[in-house]
Image (cartoon, rainbow, N blue to C red; front, top):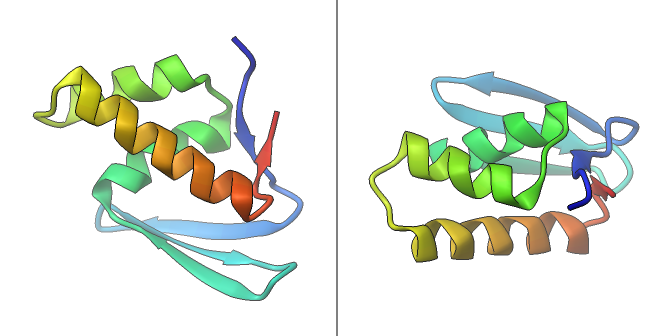
Length: 87
């Protein structure tokens, strides 16, 4: 499985109170991630895989595997559509 990572060359972000606020410098768009997205965002900042992201949600939140997988896939699809993922 390939490693996924946020595009550090385009993003400036900070985590505060369990949420992430980020600026995409290329599009000049601010992004906000809730606590679930924050867990995923921080893992992506370090570099991770899709399966590791699913496991992180299962460990952190009271969700089933189908829900965690769907949440991860939607989050990754949104970041990918914005050009914010490296593969």
